[in-house]
Length: 128
Ligand SMILES: [Zn+2]
Image (cartoon, rainbow, N blue to C red; front, top):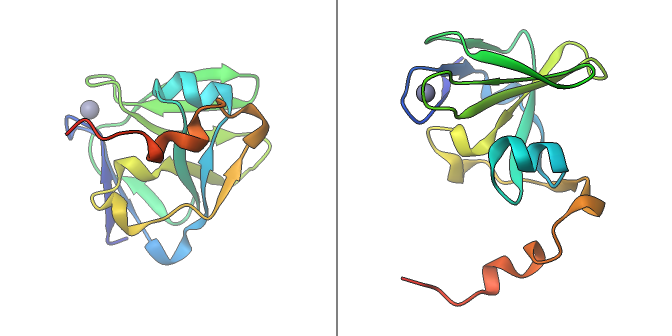
């Protein structure tokens, strides 16, 4: 369990086995959009034998029947997503990785819920 992810304030820390990661993807669903306050998010799945919290225990919220989202009670960072439909695994967010550039999404989930302007985001003029 040598890979690390953490929340904005650092209180919640995740240690996981990078070799057990599956399905790194972008999610366009309306629930993830609202939970993360972002137009889309990127996540990955781990079997529950391949990760553990090493800092404080996250707060949790049941966002729809059978779906629990876990987040830092101090800084608010979304840290995990779990659904009864996929027992034995938990989903985490690529943006919380110590090195988020190292894991690229490989597909899009809930693409039919995508905000129409997300497809052109990377073509916008740069503000910097
Ligand atoms: Zn935090």
